[in-house]
Image 1 (tube, rainbow, N blue to C red):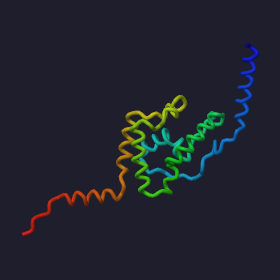
Image 2 (cartoon, helix red, strand yellow):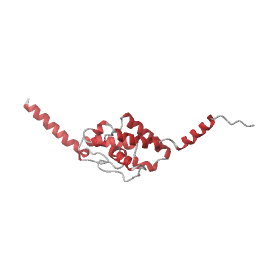
Image 3 (spheres, one colour):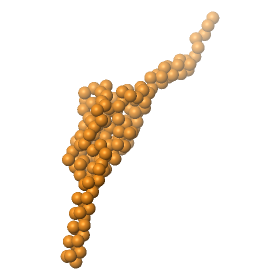
Image 4 (cartoon, rainbow, N blue to C red):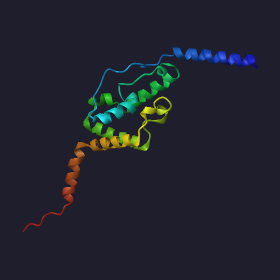
Length: 168
């Protein structure tokens, strides 16, 4: 039995060392493109602390992000996060898309989907959003959400609901 355990241990050790040589694209590097989000300092700090690792080109790559299989998971999560929403590339999208992103951001935060629990525990507990953080984000996201054309459409709809003034 002892011989079998030693063989299993050595096998796992060799596999663990071997997987370190599997290349992972883009680990430890960030694209140079940056867009400064027009947000109050308090909102920018929350976004940087809780969102930017996956949703910007300003990812912090800790040591464990270079050790397989964690490197594979982190690379996949950052790739998916940037594809869904990348604050660093907001300058390349039109205003309507930014407005949609803001509404979606609040929906994700409100539902508890963002930041994901697998990101928070155990290494990023500081990214957890407090009720105060959520209130600040809600005010920012919803104040800035809503398509520019929607306000004009709403004003027209309200004007058409008013009864016409009687003419003599």
